Length: 265
Length: 121
Figure 1: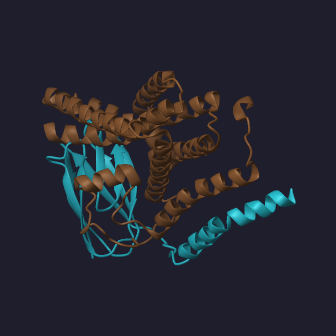
Figure 2: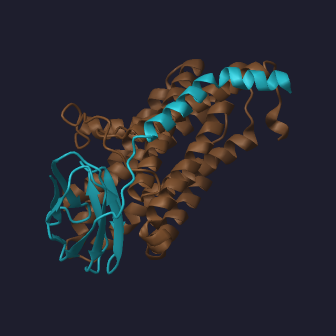
């Protein structure tokens, strides 16, 4: 009970913590105050509780695949917001120009959605185990899992923050690109599970090489959206998800080579 | 405007190639008529039956009925599936097509007892 509760909470917290720590580090580097974080945490927690309480109804939507469709929608929304954020960040790299209001709004949406998505499972798990006799053990396990996840997030934050401005933004951009492509890959998997996207035989099986169950596999899953048996559709969407923001960055830089003031938006 | 469109086409040539690749890769997808349905029950944090046999390279619809009061999360790394099955409710999960083999699954909320496997042959 202890170990399983540590693992379940750690997996969820790690996913959100990684994304949040990158965003906090980048917002510090681009000299934005961190007030947005409080709003997004509050919004995200209420989102997770509301979603968790209404999981009954959500599950019944679309002939019993409401959960998959809702989660995929959340992941795709996070992806779109991340692409916007990546574009703003790439402009910062060129012009040192931050668009405070827009950037904060985007970060609030990203973090609130990420916490809602990952927090819901923790809320449901918490409600499920508090029914059983060993719930104290489970709560201890959940606390340990959450602490480890948050610690890894802090570690990431300090690593990114210790770098020079340009380096940290460059590495942050690459990490965000990978995390955002992982979001698309997860969303496509959910839509395949719901039979909204066509199912195919796996393209390869790398589970003998890196198992998804292993620590490496889990970390790669969080960081890159690693799957050991992806289908051709998933791989194509993953590649597409990385190429689209890079293409948009190039278009922006070519069409608006000079400094633009998006703050008026 | 023309200048802009030219630029867009120029810079999106990779994206256009990828789009075409996606569609080409989608072509071999077979159309499965009449997806087989398999029912699984969750009772006292156990999957009943705990072993199911499905044909290879076939998409199957699993309907999981959770007879417990508590929620359970159907999870399988091998099947790439994860879904919360609310207590006293049922949930639908599509799996496959898969090559033959053994694919374990478990209930993430109560993994000590909730264990099962899909045998594809």
